[in-house]
Length: 242
Image (cartoon, rainbow, N blue to C red; front, side, top):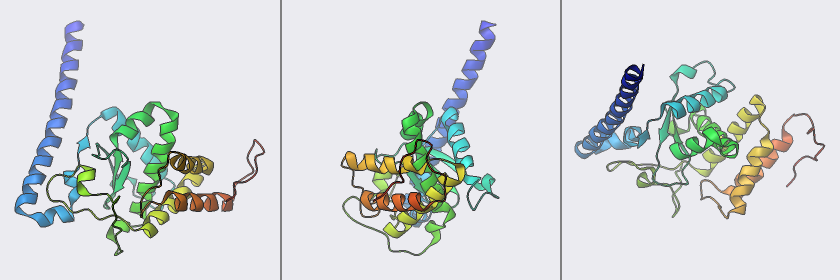
């Protein structure tokens, strides 16, 4: 039996290596394409992202994404969505939505969320937010992109080549938060956890940036949570207030 088991392990290892090779070749081709046709990068930068391969985490991400999609406005087309693990160059980038039903989530966040409950809620917070961007069609809308010293750049994402990346506006980011909170409530996840996440950001002096102002996101979350038609907390705590 040992030789057979060894053969299966070898085949699994080979499959993983082939998957990594395909990702590497896709990125190299995309980088070459950017050099000869720069407009391709500005149109479709998703091909340049540093995609990670991990079957266990990919299945976990897809399962969590499916739960959110089932309560979304796109519940009738879940098969059109693709979820990707990405090793973003900047560690505080947790997720990304570029339209086309492609959702990109931090590999490191997903890895921690798989085994740690605290990170799992941050993971669900991020995933719901990015799905909301896609459902709301933000990638295809005309808007005023936000630029400042803390704006996300192509190099922050780990994009190869001269790719162009535009940040969503504050209005779009807040709209995605509000829609994502609706999904949480439809599933039955406690919106106070969402609020606690943002409060923890502030406690760590993470104020966000012009497009993701933590204090404003927190105020909106408290408003949405308080206005939700939900039963009183079992522990008897009073509703959250400003």
